[in-house]
Length: 136
Image 1 (cartoon, rainbow, N blue to C red):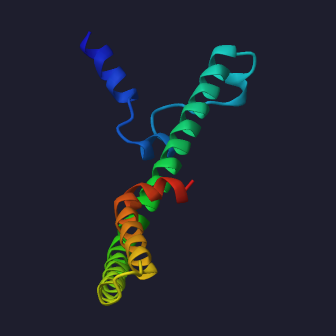
Image 2: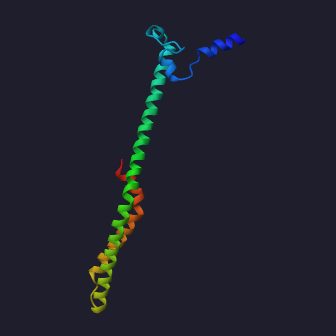
Image 3: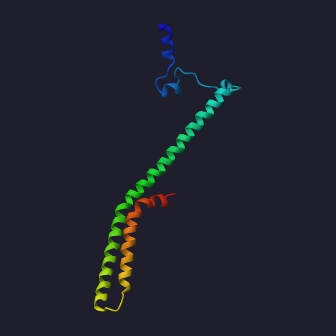
């Protein structure tokens, strides 16, 4: 029994380099595959499994690149949003000042500034979800 165990252990390769560089495992030849439906199916299954793994890795890589790009642009979006918010607030302030001096006039500046502030805040809230829309 001990001799059988030594024979089995000597036929097991310890690394992939020993398999491909003249290791103890025999290579598969075309003769071995000819008319051997089980071996051919196993090769096809192995190929399909590796192709699926490759496709999954490519998809994950694409998702990670998209996420990284989103993270890189977040500070820029925050700065632009802050500037637009300040501009909208200033416009609302000017509109309120004009409305208070002229009581009968509803000023369009208040509406314009309010729209800028609402859009800016909505863009800040929706920005994390934009990656899904723009990176399809």
